[in-house]
Length: 338
Image 1 (tube, rainbow, N blue to C red):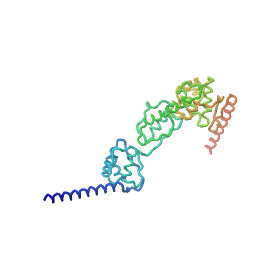
Image 2: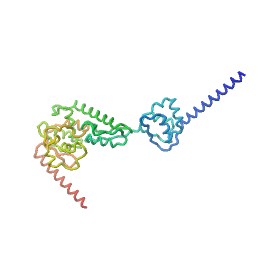
Image 3: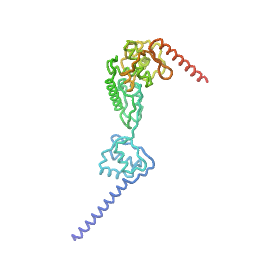
Image 4: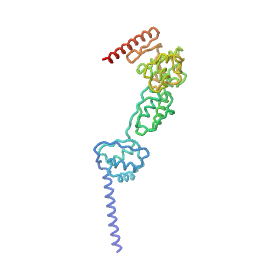
């Protein structure tokens, strides 16, 4: 009787082990079998997601065949606690094992936000607030100081916080300015990195030509050394707009004559703050200008500028520019009349 009972128990154990082994083998097969979806798909692991919620959404999306098997496999492999938030591109026909490896890899889709040189801090904040991939609104009271943000192309992931991105930009600009200040030319009429940043922002707004930055810088450095007023339109414009958008028209004579802290036709030296966020090249130009005797420059009609040492040469350059302007106005009027 005892022998018969033991024999039956052994048989049941063998059957149970066979069933368990079969279930494990079936589960393993399910995890390694190609998926049924025929096109690449985008799947998002949200911040704070639990593994169960992710597995159920994957199943609902048709990206895995069985949420329960997916969870059990992840639990035994230790991957159920390794979810990384972000958006993932899931290749067509991916197995559940491949999906599991993907959502725990942290290799989320990377996006980019480009901040061009010369934008004001207000404009940058507007751009970031309008970026749908980012989260967390930046309020007007939290707009960083002018000039403190480094223009660049930044990699982001969906759901990144706007304030955190601003901090990245601030740290980057601080690093650029610190390095450039350490490598500055001797004898500059700039008392601090802050003054260098102000000058760099003016250079940034005055020219979009890379080859001209150091020449434009030399003009302003020469003027500062001679005690001449900088007489630069972008500072006057900033005084009018306060950095909130663009002027959208030419400066009025009254604006050029009105004394404000940013009107460099009236005040001596530099304005009190930067007028935009300059890039690395403009900062380096401010601190390492070319050695020239130029004290004047004006647009030359090609996108660059004509530089001059004497007022006579400058007046001739201005006359040439006025002629180009008049010709362009006439061509525009003729085109509109057609």
